[in-house]
Image (cartoon, rainbow, N blue to C red; front, side):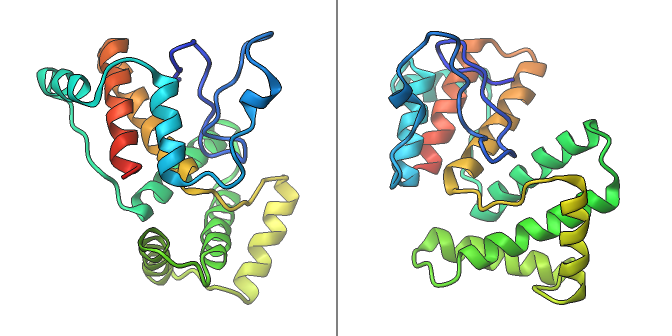
Length: 204
């Protein structure tokens, strides 16, 4: 599991409290746990860079190049899809059935699409377009009997459907990448450099 420079575990990004760092007992003040209500994606990503501590952008890029690690800027929908996949993996571990997982996935797409209605900006537009394309390809109805059935299954399973903010999506991308890099044997300095570089790219 990804950790910040203080050794705090990075929560699974697919949860309503995802993308936060668990503080160890007695560490930090209560104010440290609550990000600014109106924090932008750029500000959130800058905060994550600080939480991972360490080198400058040039130093991180040089280390990443030496290690042959890849960085990229995911599209908004790719990041959203990563969060969905991350959460579904957790549901599988909790032995939630496939039908309920599908209902949750469809509902997350509907909820996020509705949350983006009337929201301006390139990020929101790109995410909205990506969600609509996926829903059309996957035969996900925006409303009607399919939605009613999905909501019933979700209630029975006690699952959360919520509107992830852009930082949740960025966290999902980094969390997944950090786990992959750790499994591949990259050391902590390299993984942290990669995480900072990814947050810088997504926060531009």
